[in-house]
Length: 344
Image 1 (cartoon, one colour):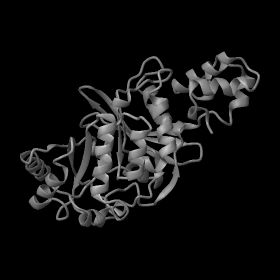
Image 2 (cartoon, one colour):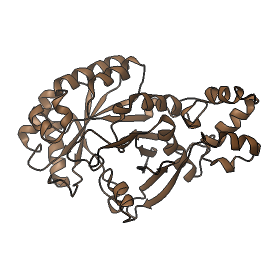
Image 3 (cartoon, rainbow, N blue to C red):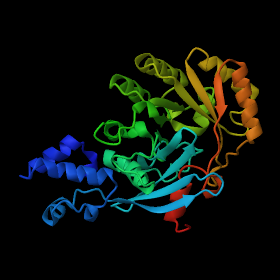
Image 4 (cartoon, one colour):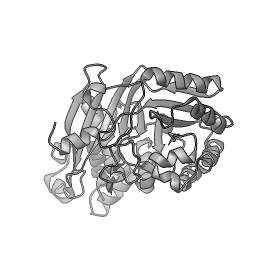
């Protein structure tokens, strides 16, 4: 347990159990949410700092790359045990969107993803997921009362629903009025399709944007690149999405990475239309970020727009994802790997 895993009330209870006044808990909470390290919290006595040293958050930004093309920023976050993950800050007209990680590595094994090459190393705690947001907010000269981040996407390394308890605890922390108070409607979570956890998200009352990494119009093609397809079929995923839509009223987003010669044909587009036509959803077309350890090939952006046009002609809402930060590393996980290998 680290203190950023806890809400304000929980931190205050933690402090009171040690015979200390409740207001000390608020001072510690403010320090955490302002992105301060323990020594920077100057309004608490040294003996208290010594007492909480072992449970105070130990994370930091150790590398930062800024795109010369569009200002996108990639961060490397390092935790107390030496593990690292990456995050990406993107600047849009409506505000700043931060992409964060939920696990160190990933065990889903998707063949187009760099984050899963070494498997799952460990889950991140709720406070470590939160810490990525707090550190970037501070890097942008923000703080507890000056939030600079508008939107969050849980699309970095890891499968969020494979770390369900910590991720949902984080969602409660980040949307809490005592903290940064980011509306759940401004948070997107991307999953490869852990069907039981999709039902849990709906039943547990969350109201985030559910994004499904689909990447195929049928189970046979999906099994070629996504091992999870051997456990949950597309029909099961769509049924769970219909349940989520019914419970939340939120449109579901499907991510569809175009892989040359695998899922990019007109027939694939028509089958995808048939699959999704009765569901309120949006399809996000993504050109593959090639991973050198894999043999999968990408398509051109022109081909992406042509595929999106086929879906639109079939009455599906579809767009091509804007490419940002191409000059500071490509696919998710690449920056992390280069840092660990000493290349940056």
